[in-house]
Length: 334
Image (cartoon, rainbow, N blue to C red; front, top):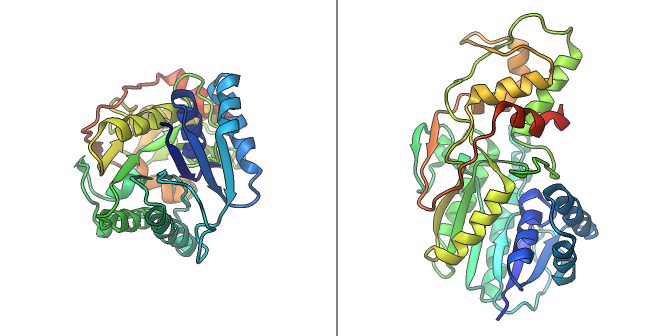
């Protein structure tokens, strides 16, 4: 018997890719909660399908099986729904890192999660899958296990809000909850295309490009504070949604799972690709970085000094892009 999937954040990168993946591999139905205007959802599904090389019949089937409901997760109440025992996928999130944005981030990521959990209880949902982030690890270094995170290690309001939302769900014993922690999600592993709003490494590429557009052409190697040989864990969107679906089928109900890349590129490989896209020389790594460049990178600078190695109980798909692949993946954002 087909399952009904109740999905939040379907107009975002992970949510749209999830709908297309489930449409290709199941006969299930989808109910998507979308902030107005709800017409954004078909547009995002079409853009995503084009970016990922999804077959037209899969896109048509996804659109045909999807019902869109207007809803704001930060509102006091959600609209009444008649969806019998859906599998709930909570993908919606606000990805602001700066302290000035802490209030809307907590409104969306914590209050929104509480609203969706209440809705899951009303609908007698048999399963709840939540997309968190591997970076709830915050300032913790070394081996990062699939265990509850500590609020004191958070570096940004975003990380702290995700830790708070995880704790809310871990304290809900009446519904089995899968907490999935992807690392830095990038485009498709084969097409390299990225149809979402730029974030993570794409924002770093945009910041570097803006920096070098504003300055004379560089003649010296940029001085950056980073740990060049440590991994910068980027994971393709198609790996994320495929592994998320596999986990909900094969893993025991509940639990925390990293959706990370077991063979990520180094921080040096990523930075060399991003700088090459800006026609800048490769970097020099130092404890006395260029102060203007450090200010440009802002809240993203700590992620270049991140000696974190994520364990996985569910095997991940290896993906180690070469230099030209990295350049091609991020070039459109330079």
